[in-house]
Length: 595
Image (cartoon, rainbow, N blue to C red; front, side):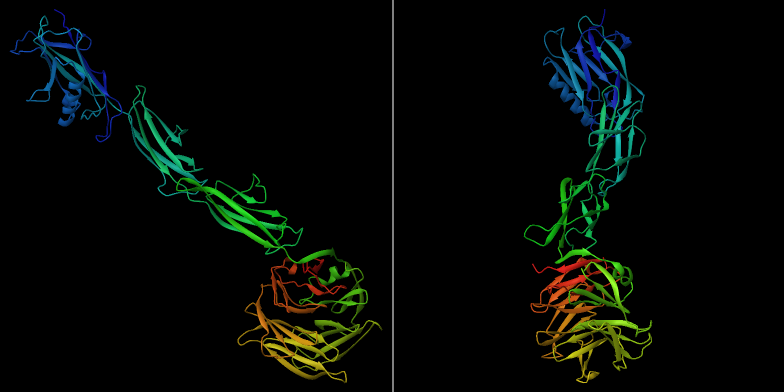
């Protein structure tokens, strides 16, 4: 008589190699009233009678797939929930056999049980065949029989690990991503932020353009899939450097900005349009324009990136003051060709009649329009060893001071009379000859100074026209070394100024005291010189990087046309309108704008 009970299990059973891992595929078990297919069951023996009251199906071998008792119990509970109420499901006390016992009055031809296991643990190796025994007993019209049903064990695809840097990395860097998986006849995908990036072997080199999630997906053609993933954060954006090659600018002047960035996705410099080929380390030439109502030009670099996985940005500003010097023309001629790069110290520009003059030993230069210079006189009384260290002009007479010989000697003061166009000179009879000095003239007094290491030595001209008639000293503050100094008569008073090695200028009102400091001001570094220049309404202290109004004490720092890194100096003076004027190593003529 044909069997009327069907017991069906999957032809292949997928087992996770990780006992603690949730199995992603449900193993199903089905029993229903019907034919037991011969292809699935092989008869072991039949006809043995047992005293069993109820018809039942007994299955032996689940412990090979579900090795933990609690898992078998869970499996039985699931069977009870899904089965017919006329059938009882349980486990034989003496072992792990599961039985399905009919307790109803009459069996229905369409009864069935179906259950699944979420976890499967097995000691079976991959490709092992697990055989379970099915016993059918006490069914009316069905001979008691025992059958063997086999299923093949396959390990489920398992994504074991995906490994990369455990610390945040710089944006735009490359990171090695290593991964490992198990399972035969499986495919895998490595994804970066949900996009498939690799099908080759581990490790994979990934370009990190933002916070990344790396996922390893392993799967087979039966729909079994496993995923392992991890997150990689990036370093926050950082501006390592943002600076300019100048501390100030004049209108129309080119300024170069420099920057260095780290872990930046993109950046911009306001008010410049960002160029596509700008790199994280680079430069750009700009032409600053002061903001309306201000003398400042501001550039803001904003760098974008990520912090703690979220977009963020950082910014840094450069504020450049616009100098109060204004370019009014370019110079040429002998003055530009022979003077620049030659004298070590600055000198002054003089106004005689309608012309500008400047003395650079041993020649006197003339400019009728302030732009083109020509040599108009030569000091034939001085030989080549004579070094010009100071010059000034009074009543159409030019005074120049120097010394004889490089190793010392007497001090000389030369005179050039513009009305007669002749030179003469006489010694000042000083035993000590310094490298720098200057002149100061009033209606009653003519004086010259020498700049010494500890102050100024002042000598005067007597009524007989001879120098050294009287003298005095302006001493520098205690423990300060003098780098430059000057002396000037302005509105019935004599003033002196010292530039010391502490970066301060010290001003003195010598008509009151030659020891008490009128005030001191911090100035920018930039050379060894300081000049006092008087105009009708102002007395200025001019250094390589600062202009100070003696009357108000106001300091204007950071003016670009003051010389280069080698300390070249401007030729300073005043124009015909009694405004401060300078000719600088850039070979341009400049005027000081008080507005």
